[in-house]
Image 1 (cartoon, rainbow, N blue to C red):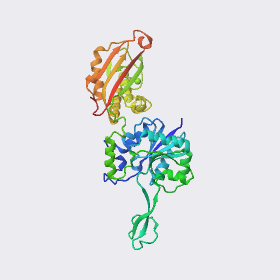
Image 2 (image 1 turned 90 degrees about the vertical axis):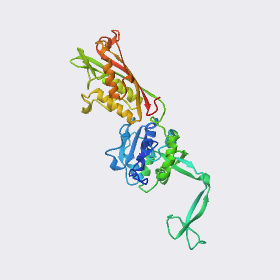
Image 3 (image 1 turned 90 degrees about the horizontal axis):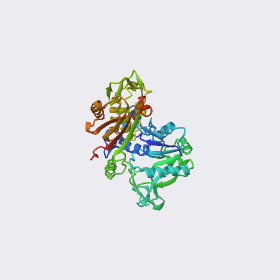
Length: 414
Ligand code: MG
């Protein structure tokens, strides 16, 4: 399998929209443009890591959606030119990288198909870019002096020369004209060579062309628009409403997650289940309070959001989480899931414990877990079983819990 690094070029500071923030941070259809672009690559099965180049002043406090990702995601400072941002990101790429796919942050509707096509073509050809065939007839223009209308024109150097008129120099055969989009993808060594040129270019493909590499064109998509003007933003809102660029938070489907946890039971430890301390001569061994109910539910809601597991967000190697209350970690996980645009529908837990009986504490556990999750007690079910004397749990040497959670995109829960 080819190791693929995605670079999102988001270093621009263009604030043409007057919003005071770079345009890649603006919202389209209730989601930031940059979050949409980054998610397209984080969620893509062919991409192994993502490097995002953002304006340097944002690096120390990046937007929340760049802080939690289901794949390795690095943030680097952008440079003054686009290619400088790409070079900084390329520098940060993994040593294993074989293909680099580069995407403009301000193209939030790129599809998984276009990404896959571009990566596959670059792996085979060395360089590839998504492009659209020109639909309009294409004219090459030149500038002539206003008072020399009959004289041959000069090459069009600038469109704003005051004493000139722009005229048609040539009609180009339309079938040879393609409009470049991103993604653009390159085998590692091709991109290294291209960036080493150090010349100005509006895209990386142009640099690869100058180093003599063949750049393969693959089919882009009309909806893969680049948002550069306020008019583009209007079109982008329409595309967002049509459902294009839908990610996990946009899909009107419920999501399920499961969790499982087990801790050894030893003397001299408290037995905490669902945030409730249960009277017992043995307790669960582990970092924090070793609450298997909270740990299983935490994994279930993180799993439903495809956000990894409890160990990734709250590693026990981090002193911050040593002796942390598992209810608190559960509440943090619930916030993380909500930041993803998901709300918690219900959770159902089975605790497997030989003794003591916990029947009388189950209501208190449901209440504590519901509070941590920010849901009603009716949406939290906790059941208890024994293991009928079998295995370690049956011998009273361990306690375990299974959990399932249903998550819904906000506003979608029936
Ligand atoms: Mg645990």
